[in-house]
Amino acid sequence: MHFVVVGVGYTGKRVCNLLPSNRVYLVNRSELNKKLQKFPNHTVDLDSSSLEALTLPAPCSVLYTVPPESYENVRLENFLRNLSSEVHRIVYLSTTGVYGDHGGAVVTEDNAPKPTTDRAKYRLAAEERLLEWGSEKSAEIMVLRVPGIYGPDRLGISKLAANDAVIREVDANPSNRIHVDDLAACCIAAMTLDAPKGVYNVGDGDYRSSTWFAKTVARLAGMRAPREIAREVALRTFNARRLSFLAESRQIDVSKMRDTLGCVPRYRDAEDGIRASL
Image (cartoon, rainbow, N blue to C red; front, side, top):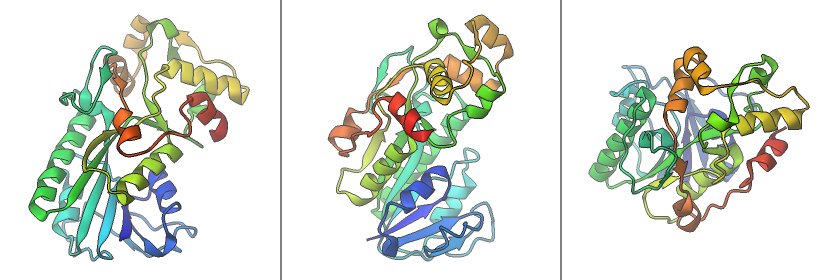
């Protein structure tokens, strides 16, 4: 089996460096840096209407990390339409945002999606399209629903330095997150193991709030603690993206990830993950 990573960004880079180097093939929109050019790769614009056939090493298992740009998801459609290789499995990185608001309750894969934001609606549409394609082509589809990703250079240090406000702890929602290295391990398990196809929630199971996270980063980095403001103030001052996180609250159950996919996060305590990232 060969392993193809489509979209070599923050997570994709971690994944390709953990896979057998003689069986990795990379597909990316921009030219890769020198460290990644050691892998066979193809630079391609998935938004292009003149995209030519994509000949991947076969048989292969694909990790697709490219975010959708709309309901139509031209990027994904172009990728699927131009595949000319035997694809055994596609692992798709979706979002836990597809579940919408559950008032802080625990959510499993059995909960019906009810996305409220455009970005979550686009991801759900992509999930459905891939499942349809997999049925048509007899290919296995694995959907990993991913929460907030953190790790080196993704701790919000610049926001702390700019003294951006956070909602006060008493008003904060539970949060869901995963360290990038734990996510990479989940991706590899989904690409390589004989785990049943389907949907898997991923996360560290640590539901402490984003306010706790920001304050912990500040403490461990030796920075000033962030300003805390009341929810009613945040509703007037936060941008639309931040407000969408205030409007939704849930705790993502990751039992299936641990028990079926066999992935136990190294950083189950997010404080350990923050410390390692610093």
